[in-house]
Image (cartoon, rainbow over all chains, first blue to last red; front, side):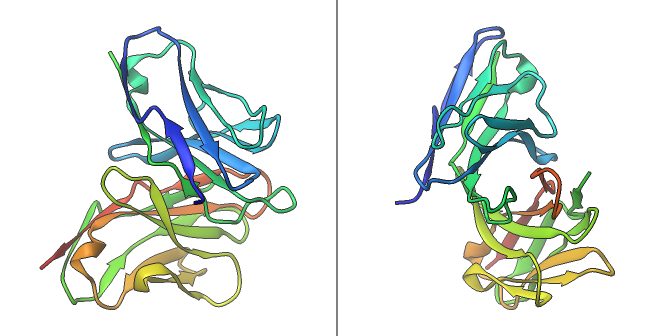
Length: 116
Length: 114
């Protein structure tokens, strides 16, 4: 079954404690992306990646890091989490042709992070 | 930079009545436009997209959307709403060149009343 898998689904942690949210897709997609969803703000893109070792900033990259060492995985790293990063996070992937992605994205089921 | 406006926070409609969810966009060049739906505790699911061609696009679950370039709109429609259509709907836009950033609207809660 084609899917995007995020872990953990829920996490409560404290300010400053480094955490990683993993994302894995089994569709051999080139394009992967991270979003955060906040009430009244919709989804905002944090980082995206067009392929292995190619990443770029989205609209709200501050406080986050990503890596793309393998095609299937795209972890989101919070080096020093703060309460304003409490949010619902989604990973997504899609195929890309000639460096552009106009294909629909497949989303994971989300990770709810609470930073105390 | 590209952006999307979904002017209504919530859309209430009686079951069996037509459903419309509004979306306007701003982007340089011809847009790539998408609609997604989100059910509680789930990720977004793709409904339909406009890339080029016919302005009326048909998608999943009986939904369709009309691209209107002069009004920069891409409204989502369904002729007869079902209670199961109650969900959060997102419009998204990407520019046809340059970066691959996808801009989402803030979402519309649709409530279909039995």
